[in-house]
Image (tube, rainbow, N blue to C red; front, side, top):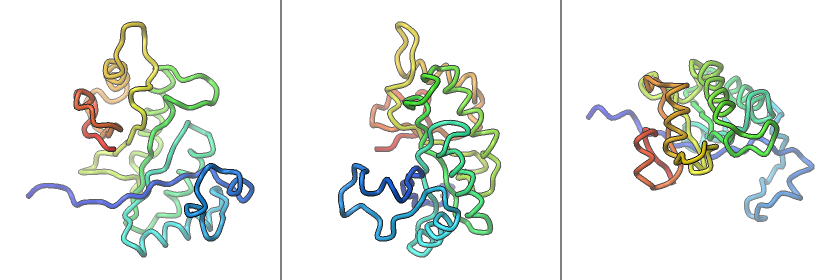
Length: 187
């Protein structure tokens, strides 16, 4: 029927260590049986193998910015996935990142360009028909110029980064007006 095969993806948070599990805002039922350090390559390898064992095809790693901890752990995740069909992508959060510098359309575009250039060609980075897939959370919170809608802001960013739509962008939400910029939506 021409449709790409379905993928089962699991959300992946790459910022924990042994000291944060007791203080994090998750329910007791969501705490891991074996607390881990998100930077530990052995833990990442174990989690990839566990995911594969239960039929998960890849992770959606919550990603903040180039060079930051989640970026370093994305690199480790892709390395630990090599030799498998496990393909992961990011849930892009640079536009809402609490770090420095404050989010702007310029640094959001730079971060997207970085992801595409740095990881888009990796065999374990999620792609459909050769097009890397990026997922964006909280799309309504993008930095805007005066009078600009969020959709217009994303359109301006995409025009700078991916004007030929060589990547697939998936935005969070159910507002179909975002489909003018994004290739799909998720809840």
